[in-house]
Image 1 (cartoon, rainbow, N blue to C red):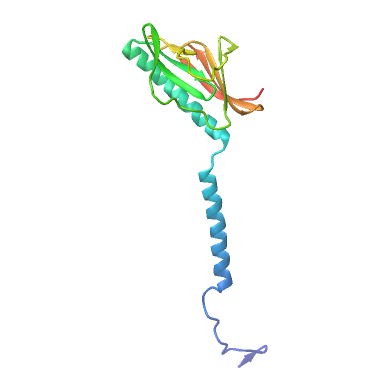
Image 2: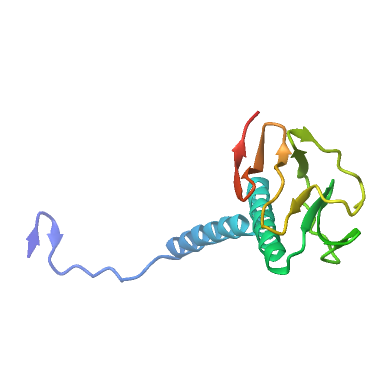
Length: 170
């Protein structure tokens, strides 16, 4: 029987995908996988700065809590390449850790105490810029971390016991 020129006894088309369709899907999956791997492997410099700033903020809070518990002053000294944690043992300041943390490559640091920019020495001098007193308070400061002159991440003391941080543009 014929309907409009077609036979009702047509041969069924075989089910499945063509080789071209399979290759196209594999290519798309490969492109997406490589893009996802690149996103996971590389972090932006802004993310590195924010992570470093959060690490420092946590370390400073820990030092101030430790100052209260041990009834001993602790401090942080800045250098162009990183910072060092110090403990006061009369009459001098002694490093707490053997290996000071370093800034990510391309990041510059600037520390302000009492509203004035402090010169950062090329080497550690074992004199703190920030001091955690035995009551848990710290001196007024502002730390600026930047990778470019357009913006910086700043951590500043809001009060002797409170820190605040965020991105700023000059």
